[in-house]
Figure 1 (cartoon, one colour):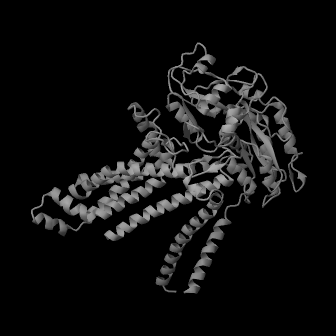
Figure 2 (cartoon, chains in turn cyan, green; figure 1 turned 120 degrees about the vertical axis):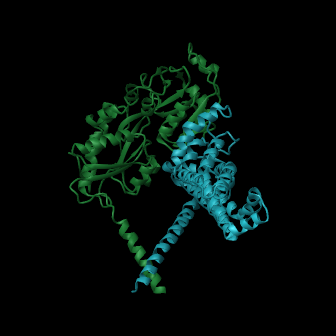
Figure 3 (cartoon, helix red, strand yellow; figure 1 turned 60 degrees about the horizontal axis):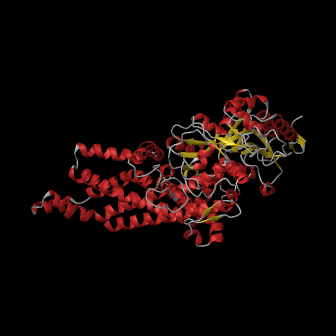
Length: 283
Length: 354
């Protein structure tokens, strides 16, 4: 066999392995979720009951879907101004300068901090601040979790957006300058419009990350298995309830947790697909 | 092309098979290796005890703290030499096992009511107060009912924040078992279980999570394993036991709960003990193993090591280790019962302990 064919075969095997792995995950999630859906039907998605006491077992995913969606969207809203302005700063205003380089590495550094460290920081530093501000009694809840989530996803949104902003062809910008446009006008009428879909896509991908974040959220959200009653009320997310409860789960409860995992997988896949779709249109 | 795909599929399958067959529990090394998994509640004790046993020439024991439920599953799937659990197996669970399973109590752990209340370190609580606080009918620390039980104590005007375990746990099981015994309202509303449908409060993960949340939050109260409250110096409430005495959580008052009669298979909850000097929320924690150890690819050598390890664990030396990490030692009667049960363990019908 020629070297070329060997390389080809090796590449084929490794990509096939990825394919088999993803297929295996989906299949086992489906298989595990069947008992929960058979028992509760579509009510599993719409109900917010979560009663693990044997004899009166009832499981519904709504509280966790609500918790996940609310914290992620809130995190995205908080993240947008931070990430958007930072990416403009890095990729356009201070493009190629030392300041921009330092800032870019700092942003990348933020992306590399493990989730549990963000959780610790939120628990010991951010939470007491929120309590001292008088906004909340104990500092656990949707808002605290969203705030930490926002900081966690800023690096992803920032570096993707910066990448896309720096890809805007310089001919376009130069043409605008030659027509007498100011720097501000170039940014807002040329750079942002032509990078728009890419920037949106970067925020959607950041949202996808927020949806699945587990440890930091578990430490701060209060882990109450109910639909959050307010911004400062405790709640729980899909990823967090799985991490919390799967250790001692069995039977129907295990199936309910796997079903939540399947739903989370589907939601995240959908969000990522949307992001990719928008990027493809841009490219 | 089809042939190529087939060859690739076959090679992937081969690869998977060869990876799966690699990790066997009992190798051909001279040192016997045992694998065990289960409860996290007694894990600090087991870790230390197994380490010392290994240093003294015993087998190397890999204990995975994956929770009681995970331990039971591992034993059912016959992938461990023994498992550990905080809640004994029900008759239904026992019947799902592929073989007869024996429970061996190894020590007594207690669940304490820890709280964070500025200036207060001597709180007394009754079952009625626990019910009110955890079910949410008592919302303030200076509630007249709490003041009536604690005359002379200056309790601040603060909201009560209940902290509970967000993960399924033996600690929750022991606490809810006690509460269901003393409170009919609890029994109908929440019942007994490793995870409950809490009406209010904040969930934290693991004993360390609850302990950390309580020590960080003024006005909070929660239930945790004694050793965690002790280690972090969090105040613990004195509880009124079934004889009407307020009992401080101490190793002696935990052991006193087991001084009553214990059934032959040791499957009993020690909560709400009738003994007047007993702390009301304590429980055995068990090692579970098959009554005949010849299963799977289990060797006779591993079986012997398993029985000897568990026997050592219930003996004096290991019990002293338990006390040093704040678990209460087995009382005489329970230790004798454990020894009797271990004598009945066999390998292909042959007793392992003489």
